[in-house]
Length: 354
Ligand code: SF4
Ligand code: SF4
Image (cartoon, rainbow, N blue to C red; front, side, top):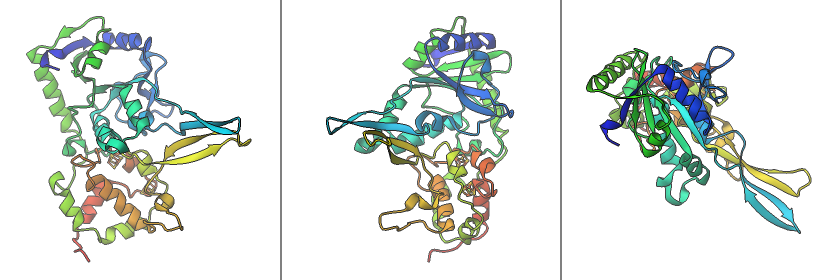
């Protein structure tokens, strides 16, 4: 849509708007948890939203697209025959307050699970994507350990319906980007058109916040492929692998990790059951186990290498499939998952191909 689809609303109006949306929609938004952190949860009331959250432990993408133990199909025996039924089906929702780096992660999901995969596209994903509206929120407190600015993921330019920016004067800049966004915005009770000064203010706010990201990618994005290809046999991977306890937390908290497992769950009477999808992780030893018991990435070092290559070399259609959120850094009990530390250590010594 055009630039005219930019508006200004006051903070109190924004909360009234959410209250109105809640009458029609399920709203997934950042709320404060008992331990003072933040999590994306379905709202009970608008005041629960925390617009100043830094980040969440679990990314919204996982909550939206990979709910735990999602039933893919169900089945039951009828007159001796197996009859298949639908699984859980998609949950229509508005995701409110998604940060740009998490919105960038949607692009990776689209590339791995979406329409571009043609016949390989995941029908559960496509169905959920269709009924998910995204109201983004520009970051005001960059997450600890994050490096989004150096990846260009601190600002989103696609994959949202509306983008909000706190102008730090009691007002929010509202960019309506899609027709679905406009239909959501129509329930705002009071707003003004954004003026050229408001556009300028949004740009200045974004530029100021961009300087506050605590970490920077040590290798330019365009050089990552060659950098890593030259270090495939770097001792860093095996040394670090020795410290890894294979808990998989670094992948479970990663907004761009899409791997899943499918398992059959028959009922005890054998007359019905379901096929369930659950999160899986390349950091678990059994992830690459094949028929005959062969494990493709048997050594911990091979699994550590795979994760770094997956984020910075196998691009999934993006410049990098790490969005720089820093969640893995905080989640790792062995303190070895930090991509910045990994790239710095890899940079120290170049090991040629064998
Ligand atoms: S690899 Fe770490 S920093 Fe990068 S997107 Fe995943 S969790 Fe965030
Ligand atoms: S979180 Fe750390 S210890 Fe756990 S699998 Fe990842 S790298 Fe290994």
